[in-house]
Length: 182
Image 1 (cartoon, rainbow, N blue to C red):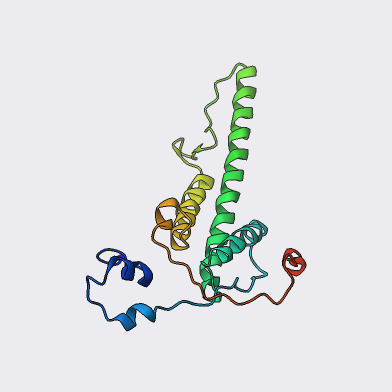
Image 2: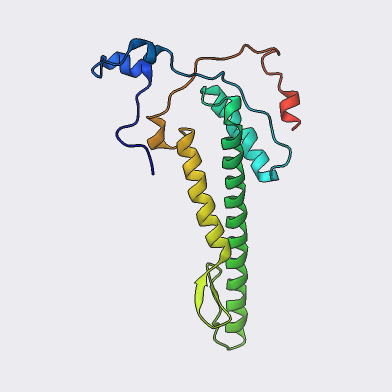
């Protein structure tokens, strides 16, 4: 079950609107803001997840939305993304194969009774959703959950706060050879 009531406001927004709730000012100023930093890269994630990690982590760092503490959430998001991409690719292949089979049956003067790739025929002759579609559906829901968590969907973007706690760069501007070698 989710949290009750409205989502808490960031302290800076709370102060701009006035302290109508009469919260102690110390609790507003001492808000936890972890250092902005891309977490350590896990070597074991799927290749598609690796691509998404490299793409999204740079954006999250740029906007101050990621810290070392977010590694697990970022891994889960990237793995869900990879599963969704895999399921969509498999579903596309299954749909293309079903279309080829339909055309072959039609050319042979037979009626095609198989599924369309999205729906598959069971051994009992009934139709059910393809397991690729089911995996893709669940992965897409997981991706959306993590997009909301990181403030990357249009509706969640209004509720996210960034951290100004940034570490200075030790390398020259544009020196990302080590990062790009991952």
